[in-house]
Amino acid sequence: MESYEEIVLKEALKWERKMGRKSSLVQKASKSVQTKINKKIPEKVHQFLTESIRKMIELTLTSSAYIYKVDVDSKWNFEEREKYVLERLQTYRNTAMIEGAGTGAGGILLGLADFPLLLSIKMKFLFDAGQIYGVDVKSYEERMYLLHLFMLAFSSDESRKKVLKRVMNWEREKEVWKEIDWQELQQEYRDTIDFIKMLQLLPGIGAAVGAWANNKLLTQLGETTMNGFRVRLLT
Image 1 (tube, rainbow, N blue to C red):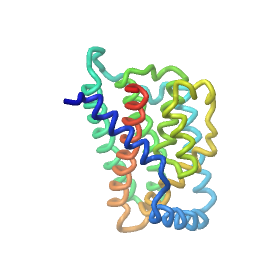
Image 2 (cartoon, one colour; image 1 turned 90 degrees about the vertical axis):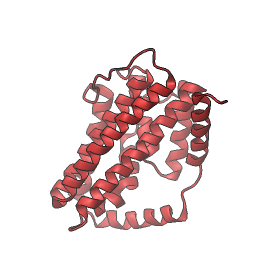
Image 3 (cartoon, helix red, strand yellow; image 1 turned 90 degrees about the horizontal axis):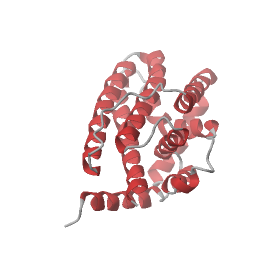
Image 4 (spheres, rainbow, N blue to C red; image 1 turned 135 degrees about the vertical axis):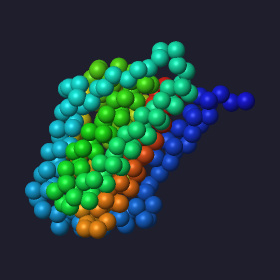
């Protein structure tokens, strides 16, 4: 009978292979639509989104803004740690859904306010997960690893393959990647979420789309985070 660690490691390696594949035709078509939508968005909106991501990265690497003490028993096995990660993910997912529905119902201004709020929720989850898995989230290297997980969750085909390689070989790669190109990161992140988040600004459907989109994005980040740590800690 396989242990929990053996089962989830198989899942993680299967996930790794999936992440290395190219996007589907539907995803590529939606990317084309996103590009057209981006051209119609006012420059001030683009600047606001870019600045939000820049501040998020600075806070991640230089402050304790996202660090909330998480009670973790050092005697927990890997399965117990993952159960707690899933609990924290559900908590943040619920928060993101409520926040997305509220801002989505408030029109364009509140819809834009959702962007930095959602970034904060995602980073808090990442720092919580890091603590639960037992890494020192106060160290620069581990903060950089968390940012790479974030990048991996929200990136295009070309960038995803590069970031996946770094994440899967972090013990070697961490000495090389002392800095992150935040301009590249913000463009990748925005390209990934722009389409569904821009629908949130539409009158009448903003609340429903906001809740759905935030739930989807947190789920995506949770899957990436757990599988990234599985491969790193179990191989």
